[in-house]
Length: 274
Image (cartoon, rainbow, N blue to C red):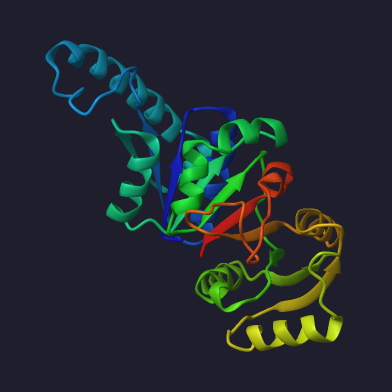
């Protein structure tokens, strides 16, 4: 949590994400990198070097830098190390390159509510970042004055492929001193008896050192509803989920889960790539 990247389009929801990132940085002695990607109209590979385009490019760059400087003066960022970057590149490509170049530990992104989030997230640059990012991505949908994680839900089938990202899940839970609520969702199409499900979870959890955790088996009509209903039932502060690189949000649990989980979850969602 030392280096936190916040892509911003200067919207209200991007500011919600920045405020949460600031709280995380203050609690964990981290720094914030604000990123604004400039995708100019009819942008091409040699746009920056084209003489006729230079005045327009500099105008947009200076305007973005002015907005970033103003944002950096916000009271909620006081006392934090904050740097800004304006990049002329396609957002998806630029963000992934910047993650590696700056050793980013966490990306925090803002989004609209259920309907707006689908427009921004699914099939967009943000969705590509979540799908391909090697570091966790935290999605924030509303202003959270006190971002405290007491109950962290992580739903899975607890198969071997989840081991690598689960190590990061445990790291987050331990750092926030949160109770990790591990849940296996039982559905009519994928049903396991309580004894079998519990055995799978116990065997999986035994391979990790978790400060505080509990295991649960929750029955529902489908996986998406199960995660949302269970999270609401225990009043969770954060929902964790895994994504498969190329398959994105539509496939985990060795099966299929629609983007509805992310679209409809009002609570913060933290994604980890398998």
